[in-house]
Structures are given as structure tokens and as C-alpha cells.
Image 1 (cartoon, rainbow, N blue to C red):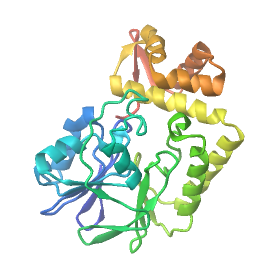
Image 2: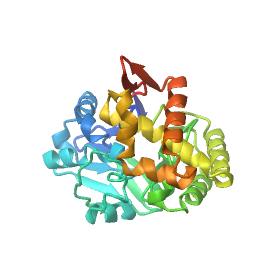
Image 3: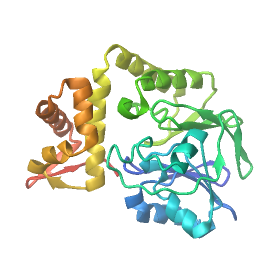
Length: 306
């Protein structure tokens, strides 16, 4: 699905392996977020269908450095020599090749470093064609997270800071124990904006900004009072994301696969007193009941849109 949100600027909906894209179509095209590396062929097709040749891209803006938002950066930059803009924190992570701080190593994700050419400072503006967007730093989910606000049209490109009916995962083992409070403060900071339409990093665009904001704030408050909720949410979301990355695996092998990862054992250690099998069985059972996972002929897969 593509939607023209502003003149010559389009929203392209993806799933959860790759984040949504924004494409400004002109002689000097601009992209916001470039998907997951292993899914680049689809990314290229979708952007090319908008009439944009990736070898002509002038600028990529990334809302943060997680793998589902930067996966096409290196390839596109190699073809076009384009500029790439990040929040200063993200630029530092990329410049210093810190694949832990941006989750790639922690979650075993496929991603490649690239050259960041400019910083997107909190409170600054970035111009995309005739459209001026305000940059707002929103740490919590990601230390370098930003949203882009177009004040004249009251449009918010919210990335993973605000979704309609859910929240992006919080990884306190990487982001630190303050991540939940940073998320809360970032959401409160957005509450001062006048927004008619939200374009998130995953999922469809939505109205009802204030309602979505209140739902997220309530969820964060629940996490503060019961941190185990963070752990349960992480186990479910990253279990699904792991299957989006690897596609399928024999169901009997999946527990052993997760036990070889960093994130699974650390999450269970942190929130559930190292009850690995118990939490694995609980998580997979719940996802199977909700039809987010399927077992077909002994093979485990996810039904979540990539």
C-alpha cells in the first residue's frame, strides 16, 4: 500500500521484518528508512514502482539504526553516493561500529555499516523538497530514535515511538534500565503536538493520535509497576522477529536455537529467574494460540507479515 501524504511524498507500508518507507519523488529523491537487508529485493521493487531509481537517491533519513530501518542503506549508498542522516547518537554508533548498541549483535540480526554524513539534531529541521520537518529526539525504544513532525499539515512520522494499538519492544539489557522512563518522557513530549495523522514505523497510518498516546502511556505505566510485562512482551515479539529472519525451523529445534542466542537467555535471566523451558513453552504456546505462529508438518513458522 502506498499513500501520498504530502505533494510527491509517499508512504509505503511494509510488515514487521522491514519498517515502513517514505519516498520523496523528484530529480533528487529522498528516502526515510530502507527496510531489512535480507528483504532488499522487495524494498527495491516497491521504491522503483514509485518511479525512483535507487542510483539517483540523494538522501536517506533514518529514524533510528535498528536493522529493520537501515537495511538498504549500504547498498543504496554504494550505488548513488547518497547522504545519510541520523540523530547524533546513532551517528556515533555507526561511526564507531557499535553493533551492540544498535541491537544487531544482541539479536543476531543481518545488517551492514554505512557512512553517515549528517546529524539530525533534536529541535532542528530537515527539508525534503518543499516540506520542512521538525526533528524530535524520542529515546526509549532506541537511544537514537527520532520522529519527524510536519507542522503545517499536522502530520507525524512516528517511527517506533508511537504505534496505534501496540508498542515497540523495550530492550533494557542494551538500552539500560532508564529506557522505560525515557519512553515515558518521549511520549509525554509528543503530547504537546497537534497531530491529525500519524504514519508509524510499522502498521497502517492512523488518526486518533491522542488516544494512541494515552494507550502507550498507560502501557508504560504498567511496565513501571510490573517490569515482567516488559519481559513477556520482548519474548513474544523477538520470537516472532527471529522467525521472520530465519523463515522456518523444525519445531523440535527451536528451543535449542533460542538457547544459543544472547537475548533469550538474558531476558529470561533478567525477568523470570532463568526458567528457560517454562518461558519458552509459555511464549510459544501463547503465540500458537493467537495464530502468530504455526506448526505445519513439524516445521515452525510465523504468520506475521514480513
